[in-house]
Length: 288
Image (cartoon, rainbow, N blue to C red):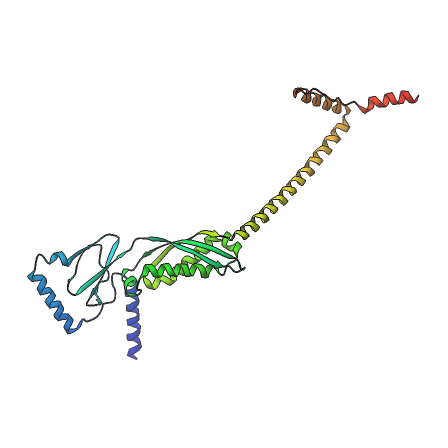
């Protein structure tokens, strides 16, 4: 009955150590030989004091953390920094980890979309190391692993989308890629902050086909707009004709306005419209 409780408490402790950079898991007892080496190293440091301080005191910047191993075991206290920290040169080794945000370009990936179209897509990823201890102890090279995982995730995500979705839903794809990458890199102590799809390059034949389709669609819309304009113009002419019919003098005024417009253009020939009513009077006299 006591074993499950011990196992549960140890698992909780390991989770706390993984989540808290200031309380990592201790490497354990270094053994008898380790204590002997530690004692000899301290003795050498004391005998060579103060010259040994040049090798014992190290400095890390504000944006760096130092993960220290003693005889191959992670020491208690987690990553050190920023500022000064003390090591024993003979038995300690340390690795500096940059915790600033890093950006990199994902190389163009040839992706076969869901509707069987081959496109080349590249992206940019922003990430940072949020747990220096995990980035050293859980993965060989956190930066390289994140880059490879980003390229693989880009291909896997775009392979489930149609071409129209890739072109119109870039923001949604970017958010989905960010969540997928963040979930995959969380055991490495890496936080993916942002993913952006930069460019989608289509084959030349497909570009020509899409351009022809877009041109045809624009021509169709232009014809529809022209037809609607003709329809509105015909309605306006019908209303104007109805107004002129109600007042015969309005037609004569329209004639005079037309002559004024023609004379302003300095034309050599002016066509003057002759009223039909005047011709009818001459025709009636001739019949008589």
